[in-house]
Amino acid sequence: RIEAVQPRPAAAQVPAPMPDLPGTATVMTLGAHMCKWPIGDPSSDEFSFCGRRSSEGVYCVEHARVAYQPQVRKGGKDGASELARSLRRYI
Image 1 (tube, rainbow, N blue to C red):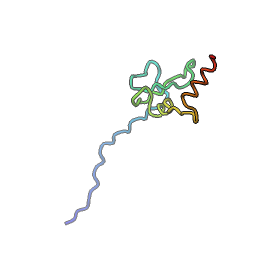
Image 2 (cartoon, rainbow, N blue to C red; image 1 turned 90 degrees about the vertical axis):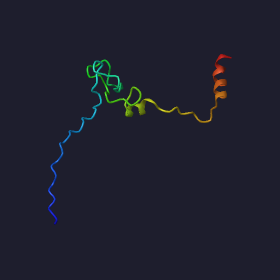
Image 3 (spheres, rainbow, N blue to C red; image 1 turned 135 degrees about the horizontal axis):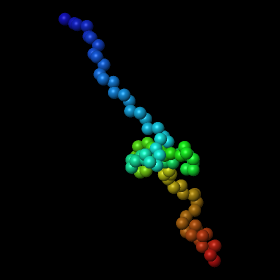
Image 4 (cartoon, one colour; image 1 turned 180 degrees about the vertical axis):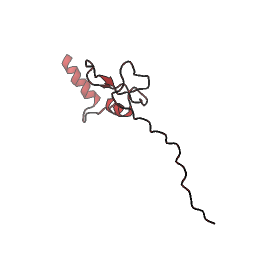
């Protein structure tokens, strides 16, 4: 015998966590694991810090990408020619 499937009552809806809004942390509210990327002019009243959860360092993932850029070697120059060029100033 087949019975009609009754819809199950919805489980208690858990509200989605609020996203970390950038620029919401001040010097007084900045915690150890919060992004310390400065936003705005430090001399203004609106100055704040990012405040998102920091990844491994002092910045969130987005600001760490901006802060830590890989070093780009200039093409065609080796260390010896750079040293010789810098020493010419003193000779």
